[in-house]
Length: 238
Image (cartoon, rainbow, N blue to C red; front, side, top):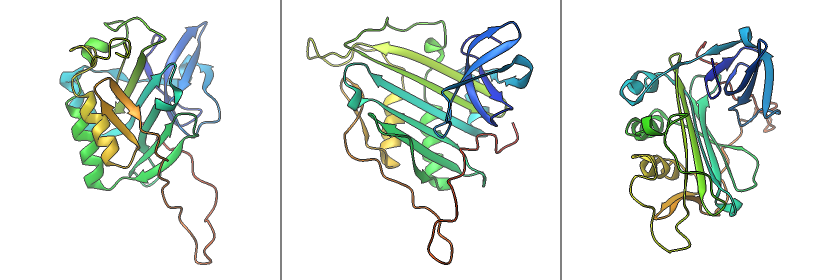
């Protein structure tokens, strides 16, 4: 286990990315839009590492997808930044959560099987191997934007991240090869599922439109049934 390893955290029932391992303790950044804490520190024995996979083995992961996360950070234009999460709820259905700009994470929808298939089909064509931790990627720039993504399923995990120039100084589009093949299709799929995001010739952005909000279940008296349940990423027993 090392920095950037994807793990299941028994204490929270969810997943995260390892920040640091030291003296038998493990600091994990939580990948959960409902978490109260950004990270937790737990004994290394209390986390289960996901087996890392490459692009060629992702089909098995996507067949049992329990978590997808995409973060886009426009460093000097926070309003263009966004995050998207898809994880399993208590009923096993994929729930889509998102945040744009400075908004708090919000549940956008519970995906139908057809919508879930649309999302996983877009994820299947991502080319992430060159952007795996420790691999290629432009150095961070205040004028540019960064991205990261994590995929977890069937005890396997894949993560990648990179940084790109904004293209605003010269007014030109992104140079070829500066983002993973397939990333525009993922952003387009998220847009079709209701997220106010778009792919432009300089990269993905939040459009500024308000986030939709999933309808809340109501009891017979018309009042909410209770507090919103946590984002149960461990619903499939991993």
